[in-house]
Image 1 (spheres, rainbow, N blue to C red):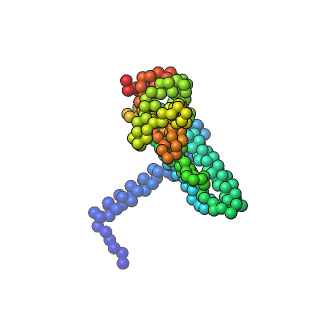
Image 2: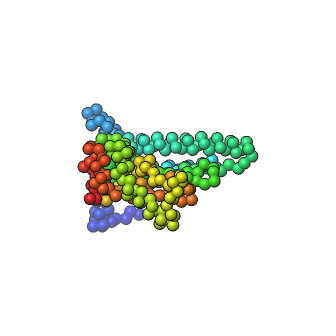
Image 3: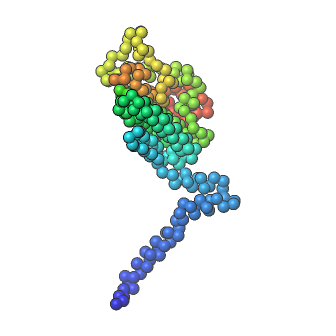
Length: 277
């Protein structure tokens, strides 16, 4: 039996169906977009730009009896093709190194009759800041290679949109020596405060390996922004064993971006910093 719908009820259904069809027609898939962007006369790089705009955050994981591996970075990095390519290469380089060391140690353990301890590398890139010019990323890396304990280390990367190139924070300064001289006093004072917060008295013995304040340029530098426009924040990440025994752990020392520090910045980057004084 055929049912008849009143025209007053049928009209909205037909309108909705027509709207859905129109939306589908207005949204070609990625392959169609790339084909259209690749036709003769289209702007160069159009297809790769489309892929970049549709890029997603990356989170690669592997867990088995041999290794535990994780490497992730945010979408803000994925949409920059050259930066994403570097991160992907860095991920594969670290994974290959982990696998090689794990296989070597597994074979040695089996030969000696000892149990093998799974190796690991866990790394996640996070956004420190994203200004009109710079994307600043930080990473805290946890590794284990079969010893008594794991290890923490840090990484940093700065993408310069104006020059379409990857930098390290120290590349913005005239020299490592100038950078160290500009922040030595607040950096060393910050270390003492951080140790005191852990209940640790700063080592005073001159022959102690941890008695001296290390150069900040030898540590990991993260540049940040409070307003999303200018670089006006800085953190120095210090791995275990750098300023104390392993039991002390790592440190993250916030250092003010002062006029003295900005004076050590290269002319090409001076306008991207905003000192607090």
